[in-house]
Amino acid sequence: MKTNDSILFSPAKIGGITIKNRFVRSATYEGVANEDGTATEAYLKIYELLARGHTGLIITGMIYTDISGRSYPKQAGLHSDKTIDRLSEVTEAVHQHGSAIFAQLVHGGRQTEVGGIRPKAPSATRPDLIYQVYPRAMHHQEIVEAVKGFGEAAKRARKAGFDGIQIHGAHGYLVSQFLSPFFNRRNDEWGGSPEKRFLFLKRVYETIREAVGADYPVIVKINVDDHTPKPGLSIEEVAGHIKRLVEMGIDAVEISCGTLSFSMFKQIRGNVPVRAFAKTKPLPIQPVARLVLKNAFPEKRFAFEEAYNLWACRYLKASMGNVPLILVGGMRNFQGMGKIVAEGEADFISMCRPFIAQPMLVKQWEEGNEKPPVCVNCNNCLGGLALQEPLRCNRNRVF
Image 1: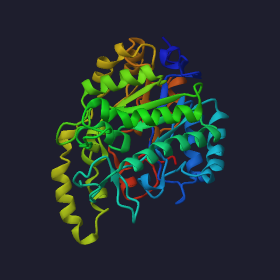
Image 2 (image 1 turned 90 degrees about the horizontal axis):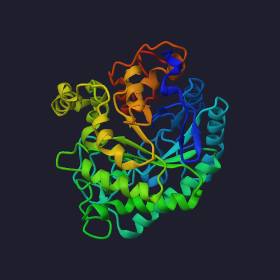
Image 3 (image 1 turned 135 degrees about the horizontal axis):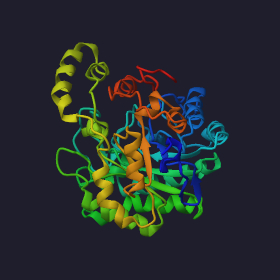
């Protein structure tokens, strides 16, 4: 079989739109937006290159819905109408090459670095190695306002020409925090049981759906395992949440794992760029930081393996009916990806780091070159972002 005859190059639907192939660029923080959240030329270039490379569906790096939920200084936002025009240029550039683009919407919750604002979270849990500030517990009205922010941002996303929305419900950001019994210690309507922990995501989905209409794709990214020090979200609880989302009309689900606060290298696997992370600390304590980080992130604990979230697809897929399942996590082997889709274990294959190094990767495969990605999982791209540098691969610079 020729490479371009693979099922990976067959079209498939998400909601009412047709994606031209089964490749998804998983949301990847870019670190190149302006301080006010508007897109830059560098931001546009990233997405235009991915579209030129024949990526079927491109999901943006996380776009904040509210300034208090902004995680990073150079993060794009949809918190204001002022960001719409520049993002419209991005979606137009992508559409010229026949790709679809979804906006990933997020509120950082406890995972924010916005100066002068104490982070808000479902509960006032302890600080961690990455975010060394005690968050305060959100009161009811703040939760309501956060939900409202998702709806307003979704409306702006549609106006900017995005083809759909992804709710970021993974990796320890606010939606993920509400879902996780590790982060959500509440005993009110927003926590205390799986159903109550699901309520925030339920309200976010309903608010977005009301804002964009029934015909507009809305999907979710969700953890199958939080990998937190004490039990967080479990696969059994996730299965219940996905069942509820399917019943509500979700258009697709992307599964992932880990939290930035406690298990970022369980999330992505591979090498740990200790020196880069140590450099984020004041100079006098960097040697100590390196030692602490080496103990906290021993490389052997995060050995890379192909398709490391596939086990969860096998657990979840049969109960999802016709709702597409998107698999991310260690996808590198072209033939292996094709087998996963052909056997119905997942409907789309999502990648992050390979596209940082090779935004034209799908086109390469479509033209018959089955070479694996040049990405070696060194994770220096992540180390650069930690130092507030733009997204790039140090081995194969494109952006």
